[in-house]
Picture (cartoon, helix red, strand yellow):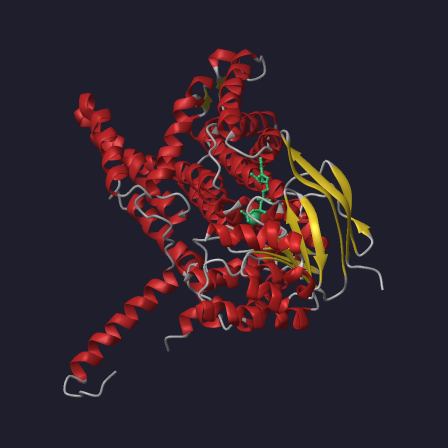
Amino acid sequence: MPPVLDVASLGINFGGLHALDDFSIQVGNREIVGLIGPNGAGKTTVFNLLTNVYRPSRGSIKLTGKNTLGKSTHEVTRHGIARTFQNIRLFRSLSVMDNVKIALHNSMNYSLLAACLRLPSYWKQEAEASETSLELLSVFDMESMAGYPAGSLPYGAQRRLEIIRALATNPKVLLLDEPAAGMNPSETAELMRTIRDVRDKFDVAIILIEHDMSLVMGVCERILVLNYGLIIAQGAPDEIRNNPMVVEAYLGSQREGD
Amino acid sequence: MPGLLKRTPVRYALNAAAALGLYIVIMSLIGGKVLNRYQALMLIPIGYNIILAVSLNLTAGFLGQLPLGHAGFMSVGGYAAALFSMSVSLPPSFELPAALLIGFTVSAMFGVVIGLPALRLKGDYLAIITLGFGEIIRVIILNLKFTGGAYGLKGIGRQTTVTWVYIFVLITLYVINTLIKSRHGRAIISIREDEIAAEASGIPTTYYKVLAFSISAGFAGVAGGLYAHYLSILDPSTFGFMRSVEILVIVVLGGLGSVFGSVISAAVLTILPELLRGFAEYRMVIYSLLLVTVMIFKPSGLCGRYEFSLGDSIDGLCASIRARILKKGGGGDASGS
Ligand SMILES: Nc1ncnc2c1ncn2[C@@H]1O[C@H](COP(=O)(O)OP(=O)(O)OP(=O)(O)O)[C@@H](O)[C@H]1O
Ligand SMILES: [Mg+2]
């Protein structure tokens, strides 16, 4: 079976800095891959390149065999790569429900005219979208928050809403950038369970950036380690845990920092 | 029956009845000479200023971009509509709407041409480019033959009546409201909230920016057409930068992102200078003080992002009356929730 996501020797420079170099990865169907590395290693940059927020200087990106390199971000999303952001980016003053409905934009197709004349297609698709939103929210037990402004939610709920919003675009690959950041231990444990649920329920492959080692080691089937923009190791959680290069570059430096 | 007003057909009927009711009230005030001729004529500038403010709000308040050339689009639409109506002779009840449709179309097309390069770029290029556009269009009109140059365009049919203005205000409000409460409107608002997140959620942001901007420009053109057929003369000097700023002030005072706020603010800021005519010397001072005061005490504008809804208001009123009655009736019932 061909990989869902096939990335070959991706790279970008910011000025003189090689933020990412020769980054290759194949993600299989329904696979959960962890992406770890010290601060500034280039993890978020990978996501920004995959979604074409930054244009890669070199490399190729194929999603289910189709090239997505050079397509604009919304097209990449439509092709099936969805993401969350390290610094939460919700539509803060809009309701939780509207946040999800915005991501359902492309699952509706009624025209501007149909909207202004309130044709049956408008009513039907809007009703469906509301229903889908509530279903998605219920995956994270958030239906009861549908009417609140997204910005007023507690931190953990905002992170969950971002994941729901990404799922609403019906992705094949879901990119999660530090979803547990700012969550308390019980929320993190809950999140770990949900990530697996999400994979099973939505049939997506997931790439997970995370500093919380228990989360990464717990849910990921495979882990890639980045340091200074280069992959320095990859393998199963156990191999990574005991890899001396990783311990030095990442776990070691973190221990020093503490 | 608290749920009744939540039903959409009921709400639509209610709004239509209210619009018709208000029209009848206005016309009988004019007919019964409660409003004198001068006051009745004030309704027309109030009307086209509402159209200008509400349409600008689509770009400034809902899309979250700062345009500084709304008067430019007003003039483009005004000239297009006037030149059209002067060169054809259609049945009276047909000519003005046709001219306004032309005004809308031409302005909206200019909106696409200006908006496309300006809005593709991230950042506040729109302010600079629309500022330039407003001035350039004024100079061009000043130097063209068929627009009458500096003398202006004279002899435009005086076809703008209170009724026509009322109809086009309603059309503007209807279109903007239905647009905003649709997937297209949500896409526009999502750009204001977070452009990067909007793109990542699959919204083609450039398309929606240009769309919102050109619809906004189109309605400015309608307002220009109403203006032209009200004054019967168009003079390029009235569409300068200060006119654009005045419209922006109306929107900001009413509340960026509140259609209701724009309507109220447009009405108040059109009447106010006239009321202050008696204090001619202090007029601008009072006007500015008012602006500064509102900006200090309510920087989000008078209405913030509040939207008035007739159904909700009646619902709320009924609920509070019911609550009061229950309180009186069930005073002794300690277990009441
Ligand atoms: N737009 C940009 N312009 C210049 N430099 C950038 C830009 N984006 C990222 N960088 C640099 O690229 C490097 C990698 O950044 P990136 O955000 O990918 O790190 P990260 O691995 O996600 O780190 P963290 O764990 O802190 O989130 C850093 O040195 C960063 O300063
Ligand atoms: Mg990062």
